[in-house]
Length: 328
Image (tube, rainbow, N blue to C red; front, top):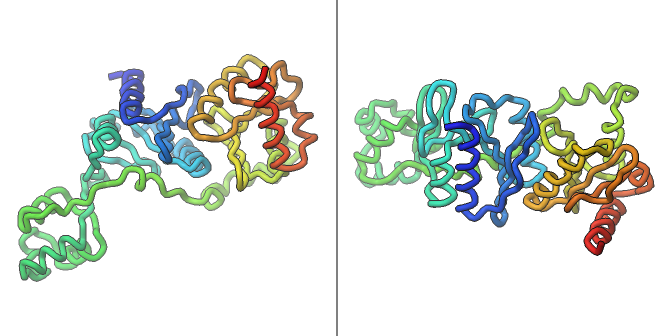
């Protein structure tokens, strides 16, 4: 299987599950390959044939983008460095959940949740602690007796019951055989990859360049201008847009560049992504622009941006230009 085949399989699975999909991101490097939405579920999907190819920088950006856009970041692949990904097993790389196409299909198309997670040392299953405790008490069995039967300590059984501690597959099978009940806790993929850490706590290294404003690039100065309008601006390094700008009422995919053919291509892609992510899409042109908009992406010259005084005025400008373009 090639990566291209893998991508087509993933797109097919998501489409069959009822997701609307963006155009594929065709830039390098890229933090995600496709955005997909179904109702309130937004996925930013990174495709890697070998999931160990995910690096920390890309994973960090995936998490930040998912947080700002209100979605979940996942990696779909075929293998690790050492072996093929197993069906119905989830893997973690830099706090990003990874899985294979079959597991993706089972979850989103068949509504079957995986039970097993891979971790250093092997494969593990989360236990329904309350069910285990009830089954043990119903069988009038002590912690020590059960521990001896499955070959673990009394304290371990207690942790299974009280904390839902993960157990090896063999232990879970033994426990289920003893009591005749299903004890494995299904993994909710969306919840597992939906928790987002606050950006400011994990990005101290990005504060250093701000100590030297004289060396800021023109595009960074433009992002500073947007920030001064009242937006929280998240710069990106591997996305089709330069930043995500967010305030209380809106989220804007924000591109910054001089006008050229690459801008037009990126604006088309940003339009597709903004439709899926339900955001605005804007390209700030440093200099003169030959176009006012590209599909759903509004092009704004820097001199026009400089005349805008706050975030609401920017939104009004965007909507007015979109309306003018649609009428034309």
